[in-house]
Image 1 (cartoon, helix red, strand yellow):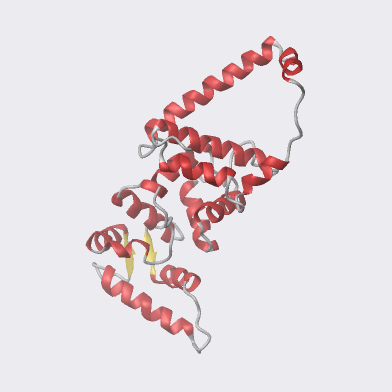
Image 2 (cartoon, one colour):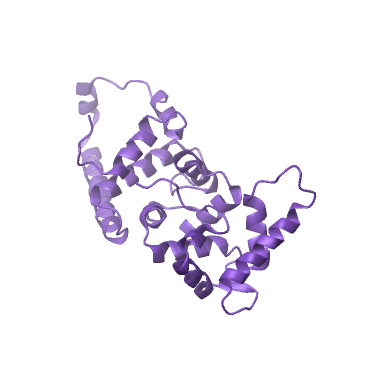
Length: 247
């Protein structure tokens, strides 16, 4: 039985790490053979090792305390769960970034396994949105703070996040070409369509007519924000970049 007070996020992470067959962490249970007897292991631990372990524990606790303040939608126990998940996934990676965090492929695998995301373009944009320092690696801080918005962000935070995902070149606008590219990538092609691009161009025209308030042929953040506040369903107008689940 689970503690009735445990958060849905911690329970979800427990299932993701230890129950889901598709979870990349499931392989971890097959990795290590049993260690030596406990009394032998204790005897082998030197004073320096114990001091180093205590230092690491203090640093980990300081990190959790810091993230519990900066990732405002998570409580402390949820931050601890997310840090544990991050450390588990990183420990299993053989990638050169493993000592630092997630590279693009690790992050994409996690989005796919945990949240069912399949659109490569959108997952790449989500990676870039999480990667605040643009070093092509997601640190534990970027991971927890990014998930705070991704999973539980306010409408204002999610509007900003989705706009950043859709602004492919980072120039502060969602252009007609960017809309076309994202819609073409995310919509299913029908076999009977001779020229599906024409249908996508029509969708872009409809989106601009509804959302381009200053009529300059592209969407500024103000255009996008006003349109979404008027009609929340437009938040993911150009492709699914938020999880379907609520945890």
